[in-house]
Image (cartoon, rainbow, N blue to C red; front, side, top):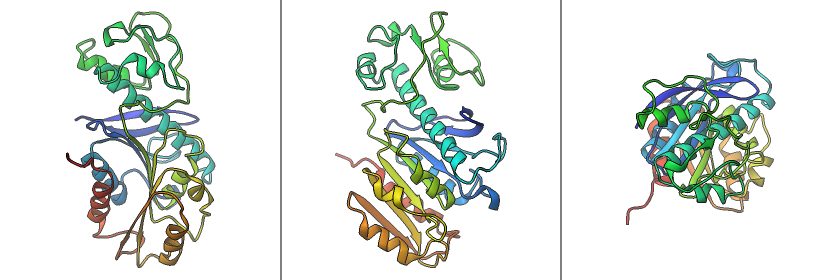
Length: 286
């Protein structure tokens, strides 16, 4: 499984790191507050990425606008939510395109989805003629199949026939062969993660670490119809345990809770977050 840097095109140009998984699904990870040193290179984000990668997910971590090499500036959460929506679209496209070009899902299955790709003709990989893919996804697949020797960095779309490609719609559904699409976030990133599912129809799970109850409301979490996984520290004064337990108690759908004896920063307890992800997401054998 390869790991590569990617550029995510949206309202801003975001840097990210894509790690290809075993085909279980996709997981996007959001980092803590940009104004307090938060970036995708954070210990808790590392722990989430490790857990989801071990569980077989293709993972995408990225920097919000204004962080690292991402363009733009901090936008109080509104722009960061737009960044996350762009990242989700990128990862969905990368997962679907990779599975399609490897022959693991048929053209008919993609064409039959509500987010069908106009211009699709035929049902086999060899019949692919016109298809618009996210940045880098087609280059990676073409390189593996011997169609080019180097990735075309920063490309947005490609046509195998040389014709002008048809546009892939922004919205759609995940490859039907893949079970789950997770948005995960830590602290400020957990709040942003909770804001995106109303705009990203294919999300199946939220994985929220140290949601900052002292600063943000939980209405979007309560409205999310999918599975919700909550992680908190018993010594956390930014994400108070009482608020975490109350939220968990009030959620009506499928939910999981992990309380760790740690502060908001989980020093020395990162591994427990990874283990909880494996317990929650790894496919059961047999």
